[in-house]
Amino acid sequence: MNPYRYRVALRATHPHADLAPLFEVMGLRPSRHWTAGDARRAADGAALPGRHGDSYATAPLTDDGLAAGGARAWAEEPFEAFMRRQLDRLAPHQPALQALAGEGGRCELAVGLSAGESFGFELGTWLCEAAARLRLSLAFDIHPEPGAKAGRHELP
Image (cartoon, rainbow, N blue to C red; front, side):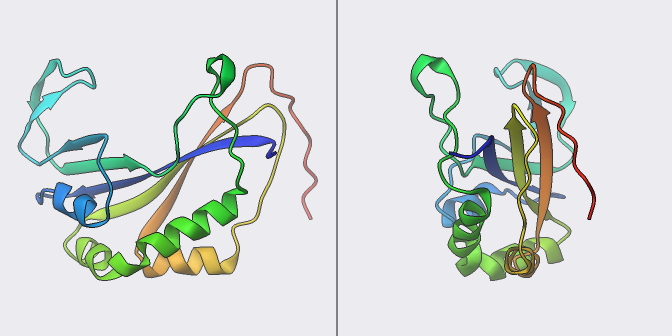
């Protein structure tokens, strides 16, 4: 079992294009989605003032199921192996992702990490190169769990 938990989502923005068709072609169902010019809404659907300036879509790539007791399930697969599988899954869509970037859009793999103790892993060159070929950024949000041990890491 990993000493950390992670969640990964594909997120995209574009100055004006509807991103739903891109996600549909990739077999992903956006959990949040809007097109530039749409009225702004809160996550619960309540109306907010103004209109969206850019288009946006996000879809989870990890299973957000809950373990016994209602806690989030620990990831069973090592992070780098999971990421490699996702990049292989997205590779056939390279032309569409590159076109999105060429039109001023941006796409990223948004990674949320959480742990009760210090941990580390390596993002190998293959993974970094594959993400770059697909024009995907990697965004990391680190969330220490309450009471997490503040480990000490020595730099090489």
